[in-house]
Structures are given as C-alpha cells and as structure tokens.
Length: 168
Image (tube, rainbow, N blue to C red):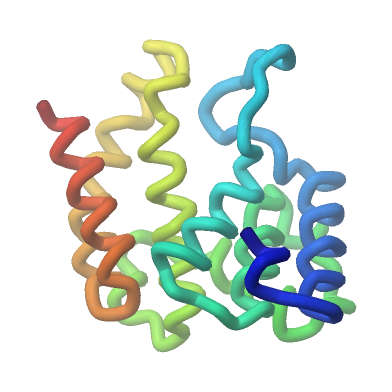
C-alpha cells in the first residue's frame, strides 16, 4: 500500500519506523497471542493502513508515527526521529476523553485508528480477557467516534459500525 503511494525518503522513514516498532514490541497484539503458524497482517501495519486509507492522513510523519505508537514503552521511541517521535508519544498519551479536544488532528486520527484495530480484533482474545476489557472498549468507543468525526469521518463511521456489531 505505501510503496504505491510514496517513494524515496518517505519509504525509508516507513521502513525504519516499521523496523523500530517490530524490534520494540510493535508486532505484539494487545489482548491475545497470535498462532505463530497463522499468516496475518501485523498490528503495526494494520494501524498504519487505517491511518492512511480511512483516516486520510497522507503525511509520511503521521503514518510513521502510527507505526511507532505501537511500541509499548515511550522511552523506546527514538528521539532521533524528531517530530515523528514526538507525535507517536503524543498519541500514546491521549485518552479517549481527549480525542475531540486534541488540537493535533494526526494524533487523534492515529489514536482512533489504533482503537478501531483493537475493537476489530478483540474477538481473538480469551473469554476472560474479553470480559475484562470489552466493557471499557464499548463504553469509550462512542466518545472516540464523536471526537474524531470531523477529523476522520470514515474512522468515526467504522467505529460506530463496529460498536453496533459488538452490541448485538
């Protein structure tokens, strides 16, 4: 997807961000473990794709920050990546109640994309894990969808649709 839409230094930024994220936990799912024999699109790539396609973020720094935001530890995000690293850390510090008020559109979109990805994949978690986290996910999703509605209407629509499926 990225190779079709970007070139040169942008692809270098994506590649280095992907490698850093993978080396520092970006492949780890939040709520479940993948079967190592199963082929799948890794979380770091899924979130970057949602940010680009559904969040309509075409700035290379935003897409790279989406990859870096999958790193569990803010300290592991290299400061040498400058504005991209700052954006990734900002995304990681956002809370559902802060999405709408966020002045940084890219941060709100990346946060919402990661939330959407988590909501889409929660069914792969154990029943015990689902019982633990699903109430919070379901409770916060309408607030996030409302908060991102003007920044990324498609992500808001997908969040709302996903929520409706989960509530059935």
